[in-house]
Length: 121
Length: 277
Image (cartoon, rainbow over all chains, first blue to last red; front, side, top):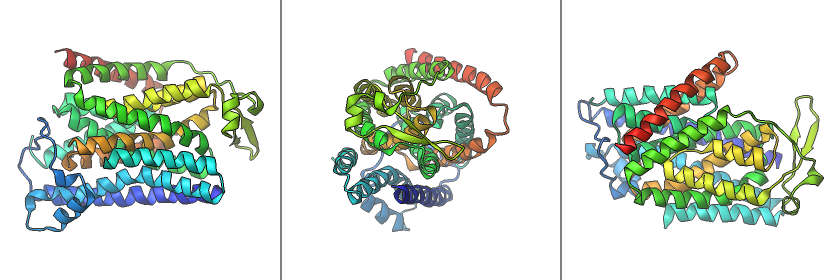
């Protein structure tokens, strides 16, 4: 379990750093096109559907013509950040499976399924 | 306020919340939401979404350090995550149907309770592994804590079912308010399951991120995550927590705690008043 803990710790740190860099880049990218505008977070209006799924985000982020949708790059970073805990659970479950600890492989699987349901129902 | 000034101000405020949170032992999430709502007039839903993302960011960083040191009890964490993640989805769904003013009042009350919990005197009463709850033994939960001198001391686990139930409530609060609800998780593990403090802190850090991830899925679907707001908040709190953890060894922590817990109580009352207005 020790080697797995180290691997888990590394995944968490590297994952967080990569997503932080992407978010920062996305924020600068977004702000450079929106100077002088009102942020608009005072009134709740929901968010467009394409920001809900990774495919939509990537497509929008690559579409350089849509300056209004520059938030997508930051959203990819945020999505990476949100993936961190499920990956944590998945790796722990894989570790238990390798140890032939069926009970905890099952418990990890249950937690992972609950997380998956919350993301993809 | 217009961009980019707005995002710079939000990022700065989030940074302060992150520093404070790690100095006084509250999460950054529970401080940053009232700051955004009361200070910047941001809608509570956007604020909760941004705060929850910042919770995941800081939890990933902190949990990594503890994992490496071998202090967290992964089995306890994983088992209790069943309760917190299911609770978090329930809470997040509840948040989408409750009125904003009701949420603001609940938030204020939860913040006050958090302050009281962190002020309450705690006593550590460890169990021997053989005194554990029989169910905990069946689930192989008792563990070993590495001591500074290189030895390991074994500890037991009490009250698994009550602990599990309190964890569900902690999960509901996390999803309902967009917070990590670390204080409530620690309450369950310290006082009910009687784990050593270090194990509690480390394990709850692992759990906070997983719990928050369960609610954030719901938030994402409901459009609570505005990337233009999440970005400065998550980056600010993450950087703040990083700096705060390093200040811990040099800052007059006791004095700061008293001052800022007082300030946080005032903010909590303001949140309740805003909801009642």
